[in-house]
Image 1 (cartoon, chains in turn purple, orange):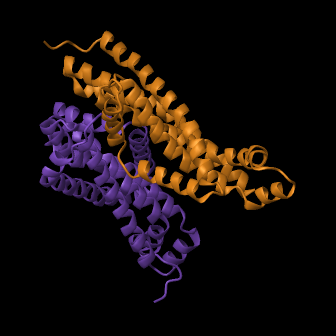
Image 2 (tube, rainbow over the protein chains, first blue to last red):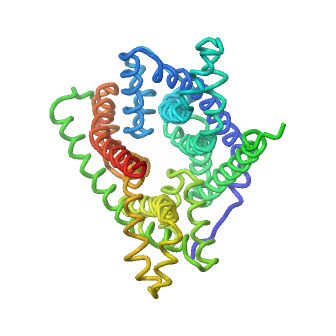
Image 3 (cartoon, helix red, strand yellow):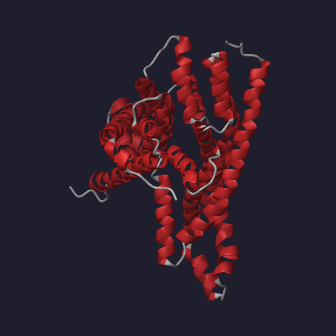
Length: 222
Length: 218
């Protein structure tokens, strides 16, 4: 009979906290940068010149139809061949941004397309500039429409970020690998790590549903 | 010693793609059976069944696939099986797919208007017949596009089996890269092969979705 022994895992508490914190920082950072990228790309896709639209489409299709693991190998091992050498943590961030950008652009584009054309025309008729129309009439109502898709994409990003442990970034999954190689309590280590991921994703989805209720609720009572 | 990247290296990567396809097919079949059970449990009248299915979905959608693979891989040893990357990957990916397909199909079943099921009940059809002849055929139409979309996600997910040592496409890429040290070429080819498998599926999913949307708008 197998004897479960969680003591070594509990003993490495500081490594777990450190790893979990880096996972959160990586995911939030990648989402912030990725979201900015997505907004620019979505704007270019809906109102940019044809070749730019094709380039963005190609980027989205390539990223969405290849595994994240291969993307991060490409960035971490492939880019140095072109002279761009990255530390594991920055390669991880770059890979997550590039990955999130593809999904984010499509989500934001669908939000933009959910805005009725007449509203944009009304904005233009009122003398707003193109940027103002985009920011005030398109972006905010679109954000409300896509908030659920965006938040579940964030949680998916956080779970996917565990893959960056393969290039030995210092995230939560990598903390698991380290503790495992010190203690050999493989199952216990990954059990605890999985539980922490679960707790984080539940906490974030609770937080997001609170934000959704507070800021995006209809009717707007103000 | 560093080998040059040649035709043999390319063939090695190409043949490894069949293991990606095999693993995907098995995980999809296993996930199909599991997902069907989960979807029925999730939409059933019995509360404990519904809650158990919801917990299962939450658990697998709220944790990384990589950790699921590790837990099955190391857990096999604990319950007395020899550690085997092939079986661990099959089991973990099937469970993973069960949760996601279960959630997709629950949505499809719930998208069929309640009146359909009520009318069938009024006609005296029992649960099995109601599901088989009334609800599921209509739900299936709705389910096709997201199911194909998930298949793409599953195929990409099989790449993680390389981390527990299963020799599929991504692992073959790593092996060849270690021998030739041409990461740019090697991972471009690996990515291109994944793309060649996944892209047609993505396009199909989108086409079906558009067709269905047009039919609904009519």
